[in-house]
Image (cartoon, rainbow, N blue to C red; front, top):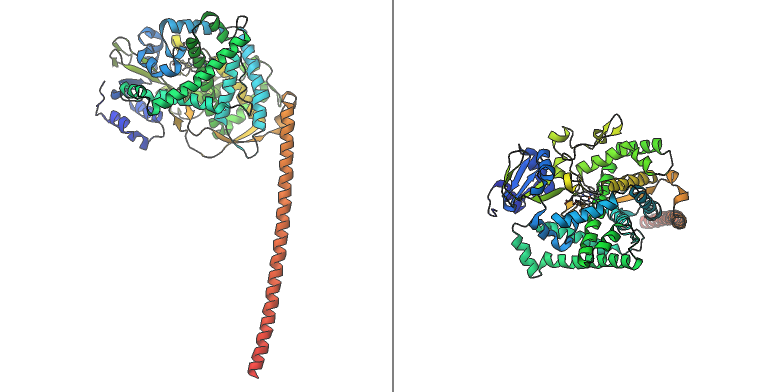
Length: 532
Ligand code: HEM
């Protein structure tokens, strides 16, 4: 490692001078990768080789998978947050968790199970929550999506209902701790030497102190999830956590498993939904095309009834993949080179080098996607009106090869169901602050620094009153009626005030005129008298 490297790139990294020209670090890396002939660059002082070359990605993830593990360095960086969870381990620990999770996630019955959970969450939680927030309320949809995906993930993986879409749910502590731990762990990887964060951790200083506090908070939640699962009994349950609990006794290990799955299912889906709605707000033509397709497949004013209907929504599927091409929830992914090697583009790697494939930059390469690569064009995923997938090593959004994401189908089910439901029931408008491009917070998954502030208006024609939480809906309507009454009363008072004001003005000007005429007659009298 050359922590004193004086090359232009390392100096720009060290002094953060890149931030003069770019909003985000990932945009700067994209610029460097676009201009590299091999589509591979080196940040020498981090000993990090970053690539956007699909041949290199395939080589790392598939051809020489065993030479590119996550590695000890990565495990240490994320160790306090993720422990021995699936995202942070290799070898036996990884293959055990992968096997157990695959058993559950690849079951044929899983689709209808996931479909039922997600649709329940949408109809009985998400829509009523949004109804109560419409009309001039500014709402952070990123936060709402985090709550929604957290709820769905808990039900799906742990058989528990944390009810965090209920308005009274105190999610903020947990949510903030989770985001903070993710951010501070990612920042460890950005320090020039691991010694920096290790010393800070030893003396419990600054960011390391805050990380430990966040992890403590997360541990409380994970313990509670495990305690509740135990209380309910897990022997006859088939959810993911019950499966693990019947073969793992180690509480700390169970905690790590729970955290990794929460990270897998909560942050990624929320991130994908956030950027999808951000893009739709900027591309009303895509939104209209999604509505049109839904009208044709499901019927005007109708709700989804089964998983098969979702599969026929090819344009919607194309739009979600296209959105993740431009805004991948996991923007980059690092491995460590075990033995000296040469990548397909000729890049030599020494043992111990960090190798990162950069999905965010890959989605913006002309060589992969053509000249219109920066445009949001769902049709690039359609052939004769049918969705067709691209090569996973050109589009490693769900990774690829042996460590392929296990939740792609579940994620798409969530994205498509939420999109469909919200687009037909609400008009969603961005609220300030407005940005041309998003600003991201550092973290393991892409998070908009300022959330996704929006204003909602109900599209009353499209509401399916039968399936809504009627009590909440009625409450909402009565609040709206009350608001309307107050608005009318305020208008009346305003008019009355205006009338009064006019009257006073008239009176004053009349008095003024009278005074003037009195004065002038006085003056006249005076002048007369003077003349006299
Ligand atoms: C849009 C949503 C999602 C995206 C973009 C996504 C992306 C990814 C990526 C990039 C990885 C590789 C991570 C790494 O090795 O460091 C991964 C792994 C994984 N994902 Fe997802 N994911 C999503 C949703 C989900 C959901 C909903 C679940 C669970 C139901 C899930 C379960 C997993 C698991 C278990 C792994 C570990 C696989 C392994 O290491 O072998 N993911 N995902």
